Each structure stands twice: as structure tokens, then as C-alpha cells.
Length: 572
Image (tube, rainbow, N blue to C red; front, side, top):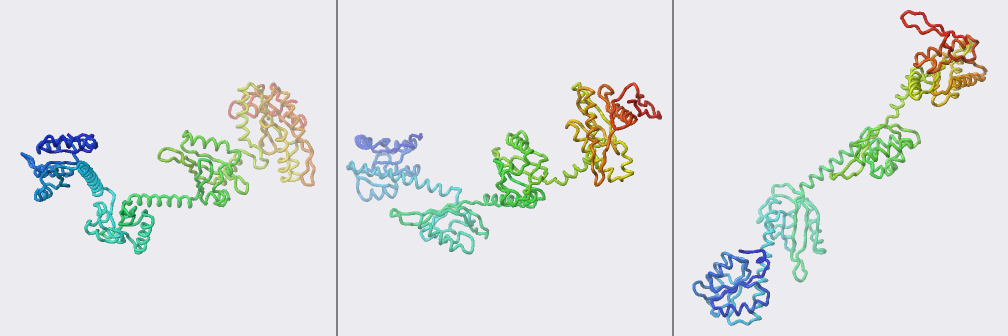
């Protein structure tokens, strides 16, 4: 049984029916490092051949029972790779011819032998075996390789091709042999190209590139071509070997990728909204024309800038937090309204949608973002909001927004166990101003008074226009009733300063009614009603002053349909 050790060893089988000669041969070859096997007959030799990987046989020519000719013939049939040599005392020409013709003998050696010559012949036999083994190996590789291989002579004519090469060109190997290399590449100008390739091969010994290989049916196949020069012992070019790889699938993938990239570029370039690819360092790598139009930058300037440079300072912290969440994977996509800075410095409102792109291994590559300009939409929303919640003439909150803020102020006062106040104000004799000087002067007076009232209050307080010349105020946090009185005095003084409208000088005055939470009421409706009543009390007392609600003098609000309205007069 052949073992891996047998295949690695250099095994020499010695066959002779004379025991002394066998021992003499063993003594001669053992120091040479061979693995020695000895047989005294042809039958024993065949058994050893079957059990071991023998590279060289050195056998006698004439033996009893089985002659050397029969042994070598049977050995050749069963083990054709083994190198067979004859060592015989019979040197007649007939014996030599018979041995060579019937046994495929490598060498016929004579007894008695000369030791050094015999050792040299055996070394040559092993070298011949190694060379033959390599040739068989390369031949097997050549025949069975999946890559197409062709061998050319030094003029570029095909000498031999392997089956894969023939299959690639769709023609039998015998048809391809003898054809010039130029016939194996497609294109009208290929002759000049082939001459250039051959010149490069002769100069450097190597050429690599891509070309199209024509097939017998008239189609062409894209191939990667690797050519190498074959040289003799004098380094003269004797031919060339070509390795051809069908790259149809790779080319198809490249074409598909190019088409996909083109579609992406077209979609990006012609998209009606801004699109941008942002590097992990925050740099804008690629932008489309729509984004350039939104921000007012030329493409060459915008690409290479960082997103921090175009982001409004007040939005930068949130942007950085969103970027970190995308990188951490806690958010798959970001959708947000934010502000960019136009090249001319103005603010541009955008709807931003951004995601992190990763490769097939999950490694972050870049950010992809879509940017829609919503500045006009934002302004429209703000305008609608102002119409819904602000007075068009004075810019103050209207009654609707005032009531929302009053409810929040009372809720907070209740939670903090603090006091709050509601004030009703109107301008004394405002109707006379309108009747005498016209509504334009009246409107201008209202705007000036509104600005003065707002200037007298804290940021947490609210003044709103109730309608006509009436205003309402909520003081969100007061420590004691006297605080409301001091604010009322400040408001009256602020309103009462002389003012000029065109050539006209006016000195307006105001009357103010005050209701306190929780002393006078715990809900907005009650406090509004009581503050209104206190206002009428202030007007009844002579105007240009203020009154705090006096509970005992105000009738309760009606509690049934059709009841007469409560009196708005309260004593000073």
C-alpha cells in the first residue's frame, strides 16, 4: 500500500535472482539516500510495485520463471510512470533491442558495472522521472484548467490551445492552431494593436490588458489577457503563452454599476429638491444644482464646505446631536426643519431628511440628505399663525392667544401656590380722538399705546388687545396685591406720557380694572368678568386711574338663560 511517505521518498527497486549481486547493489545505493526495495524474482518485483510508489526499476535481464522482458512489459502496463533500466551480463545487440522494444527501457547497463557510472545513471533516471512527472502535471493542468490557455510561436502564431481556450472562442482546437494572434481579437484596428503588444512582449516579457475575443459564431467575448514571453537558455524569445479570462460577468456588473451610477447622477442632478452627499467628517462631497440654488453658492464653492458653515448657529447643536445618533445607530433617519444660511446672509428654512449609508459590512461610509426649501411655506405658516393669534393693528396677542396664556399662568400659579392678576384697560375718551382727528390718528394712537404697555411689563407677563381701545393684561407671578397696584400705576404712567402723531400732540390716559387670583377667583372666566367690572368702577370714579375688585359690591354672574347682565359699576 502506497503511503504519503512513499510518495515523498525517492524509491529504487532492485531486481536480480542472484542474492550476492542484490546485496552489492544495496551497499552501493544506500549511502545515496534512496529508499531501497529488493526482489529476487519478477513476481516479487510486481508485488512490490503494487505496494509502493516506485520511481526507478533496475532489473536483471535474464531471470528464471519470469524474464526481465516480461517483468518490464507488465510493469510498464501497470505502472507506466516508473523509469525502467536493465542491468545485465548479456550485452548482445538482440537482447538490447528486445529490451528496448518490448519493455520501454530507459537505459541498458552492463555487468560488471562501474560504481560512479551506475550511480550517475540512476540519478539521471530519477531526474527523468521528475521531469516526466512535472510534464504530466503541467499537461493535466493545461488540459483541465478553467482558464483559457494558448501557446504561440515567436511570430505570434498559435501552436496549441487548451480545451478552455477552444470553448472560449467557440471553435475546435485544431481549427485555432496555426492562426495568427491578430485573428483572436475583435476590431478593425486590431492588427496595429497586436503588433504593439508583440513589441511590448519582446521588450519587457509581459503584457496585461483587456480586449474582445471573437467567437466562431460572429459574437465577441470580453477577456482579460495576460501574455508572457517564453525564453530559451540563452534568454531568446521562442514563443508566448496567453492566459485568457472571460470577464463577461464582470463587465456586465460594471455596465450595470455605471448605469446605476448614471441614474443616480441624473436623479440627483435633476431633482427639484436639494440633494447632498456628506462625508463622515461633515464635508459636502457632492451637491446638486437645486441645493446650489437654495443656498446661493456655485457648486465648486459649496462642495468641500462643511455642513457647520451653512447651518444657522442656533441649530448647530441639534444637528451635531442628530449626526451622532445616526452614527450610533439609535436613529435610522433624521427628519427635521432647520435653518441654513444663504450665501448673502439671509436665513433659509428647509425640511431636512438625512440617513447614514453603510457598506455591505455595516461600516459607515457617508450621509445622504435631501433638502427641501420651505422658507415660503414657513413664512405662510407664520403669517397664518399671526393672523390667528395676534392683533393685525398693534402686533399684540389677540384674545384667543391671551386666553391660552392666562390658562397656563393660572395653572402654574396653582401649582406653585403663587398669586396672579388680570387687568382690563381702555383709553379714556378714545371715541373723541376718532371723531375729531379720524381713524388713522386713532389707529396710530392704539399702536403707540400697545408698544408702551408691552414695554412696561416683564417677559413672563402678557398684554393683549381685546378689541377697539380695550387691552387686557395677565401678571403671571405676583407676591402680594400691592404688586398689581404698582404695575397698574406704571402702566398708567407709561400710557400717559405726551406723544406726537404728525403735527398733533396728544396726552392719552387710561382706566384700569384689576382682579386677583386666588383672592377674587380661581378660573379665567371669573377673573376676566371681575376685572372688567373693576374697570367700569375706575371709569365711574373719574377715569385716569385704577381699581382693584371689591367683592362685596359686585353681583354674581347670571346662572340661567335670559338673566339680565351683571352691573359693571363698582364703587371706588
